Image (tube, rainbow, N blue to C red; front, side, top):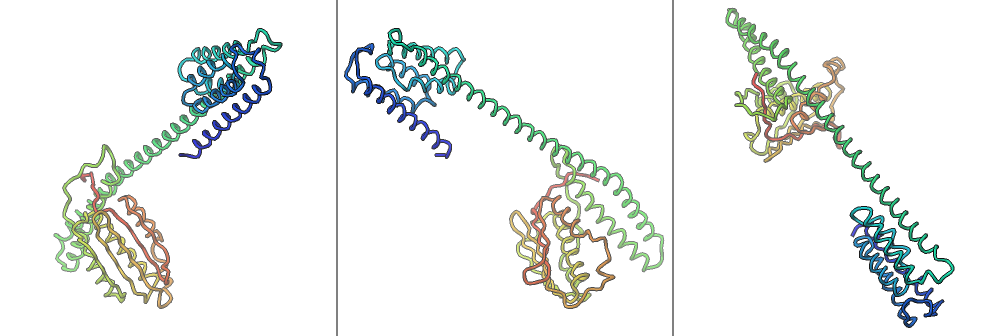
Length: 381
């Protein structure tokens, strides 16, 4: 039972007790049966007051039943509860307004008849109190309806605001995807074609090898760009296409390259790497590559650990390093734009993952990313 419901029950019980005590006290204070429409012992009048007050316990769920029952009892002994139940009829009664006022009118007439109002000096106080209670119930009902309507309007406005924001983000993603596809892809295609032409036309083996590397790197960049544009676009939901060959270098090769330049790196892979789609695999490669580059630049002499856990639905990649053994080279540390981690975070979030980069508890630094195993792309270049 909720706190609000408990409070309502407590209020109803208190009202019933007050009505019982007030009505019983009035009957005991004036036991003259000559003023009653139906003569009966005093204890019967007191009991009638208690039964009428007990009907206040159901005034919220069955206001009409409570009011008509109290009206019937008031014909025998004008019930003190009759001045409280009109509030419930006006505040909780269902149906048209005339129905509520009809029940309130019947209650008032029954109370006046039971009290022999034509033979007393003040026949106006009781109807006035009943009317005030009914008007108070109408006010509370109108205020509750207004608050409900205002709350609904605020919720609708908030939902509309969120929908507009989502639409604006979707439009911006589509615009960015179009710009990347139309401008960047075109330029990279030209680079690949020029590199291929240079490889064919040159007779220098060194130049031919460099041109082939440039062409292969350009082809890989086109593949990654196609996947990234496919993730950015969200028109009518993803339309999976057949993935191209995954030419992303293996992590083992990347770790070996770092070891060759003097960085102590340990690679630990757990699970099945074949679960991972090429887009996620390339993101993992860039994550490890950028992290190891940062270790080279900012933590010379440190040892690094690359840990990859391939789960059923997610991949968890962690690259951590020990504290630097010596001061970093100022020129090398200043090289680059300083946006590597920010770019990685954006790339990971575009795929629906999360990335954290923070100092480790034992010193050093740790980069941790959680990525989905599979990401569908929807663009053909």
